[in-house]
Length: 82
Length: 417
Image 1 (cartoon, rainbow over the protein chains, first blue to last red):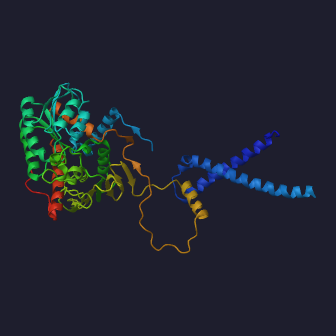
Image 2 (cartoon, rainbow over the protein chains, first blue to last red):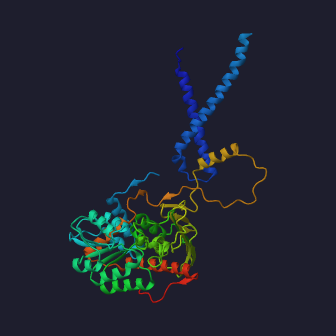
Image 3 (cartoon, chains in turn red, green):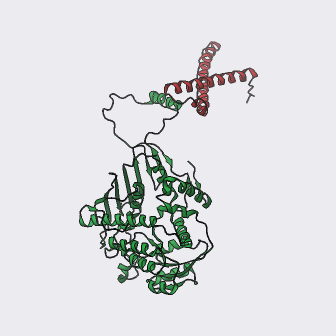
C-alpha cells in the first residue's frame, strides 16, 4: 500500500472550504431567526446546531466534489485507453 | 432529564422553600412541622393494629430518634407475634387496646386497624389524653367522623389522618405552582387508581375470612372508596382549596365475582363550588394505566403521580430547528392528493418537564410519621391537618353513598368543621 501525502496546500483548501461552510451555516441560522421571528440570542445559543449544519454542508460539498472528480476522471481514462 | 436522588437535607431545604411561600403558609401550616427542632424529649408510642399497614409504618417509626415504641396491640395472634419479633422484646404486647391504653398510657398511638374500628379506638385514645395518628380513611360513617373531630377539639389532642400526600414534596411543589397560576384556573381534575388483583389475603381457616378479608364486606369496609379513592379526593380538595358540594356515581362487581360485597369498579363525578369537577374511577381488573391525578387548566396540565407538567402552549423550537424540520418535510414527505378537511384533536406529543427534578425515596409516609412525632414532642395541635382528613373522608363516604343509593349526594349538614 502506498503512503498518502496530504500537502499543506490541500489542507489549507479544506480548511477554507470548512470555513465557508460555517459561514453558510451561520447565514442559514440568521435566515431561520428572521423567518420564524425567533429571539436574536439564538445566533449564539444555537451555535452547536450551526456546527452540525457546517459539517452537513461540508460533507455535501465533499460528495459533490467527489462526483465532479469522478466525472472528470472517466473521460480522461477513456482517452488514455484509446 | 437526569434526576438525582434527594437526600434528607435537600428534602428539608426544598420543603422550607415551599412552606415559606406565603401562598401556602396559611392553608398548609403542617409544613412548618417538617423543620421543627427536636427537643430531645423521648416520645412513648403504641401501635394498635400490627398487620401489613401497621408494620409498614413501623419501618419509618423505628428510625425516628428519641421515640420509644413501648407497646403494640393486635387481636390477631399471628400479626401480634410478627410485630413483637420486628419491634423487639422491649415493647409490651396486648390483644385489647383498652387495656394497653390504661396500663401503658403512651404519649401517642398509631391506629392501623380495619376501617370499622377507627372511630371508637381514636375517641377512646383522645379521651385518655393520648395523641392519635389514625390511618385513612377516618371512619365508616359521617357520624363517627364527626365524633372523632369533636373529641379532638374538646380534648385538645393531636389527630392526624394518614394522608401521606400532604407530606409528599412533589405534591406540595405542585400545589405551589398551581396557586401561582402556572396552569391558570383549574377547570378539571381527573384521577384514577387501577390495579389487577383480587385484593384478597390468604386465609388460614374459613372462619377467619371476614376478619382477614374485611375489605370485601360492607359491615367493615366501603371498598375502593375508603381504601383508594380517599387519597385522590384529599388531593383534589387541596387543589380546589374547598370540599365538593355534591357527587354522583356508579359501581358494580363485573369481574371478581367471588362472593365479595364491595364493588370491583367505581366511577364518580364530584362537583365543587368553583364549578369544576373531579372525575374519578377505580377498578381492580386492569392495571395498564396504574394511578394518576391529572390536573387541567387553560395554561397547562399536571400529572401529579408521575410528577410531570406540560404547558398548553410551549415555546416554539429554535428557528434553525424549525427551518431544518420544514425543509426535511418538504423534501421527504409524500405529496397529498387532497388535504384533510378535518384534523383530529390527537393528544399533544410533548415530553413535558418534571415538577421536581429529584428522585423521591419517600412518598410522604416517612415525613408524615416524623412530623406526627415532632408535633407530639412539641405538643403542637394542628386542626388544619385534621380537617384535611375529615373532609376527604366525608367526601369519600358521600361517593360511597351515591353509588349504593344511586342518587346525587350533597355535602352533609351539621358537621363540626
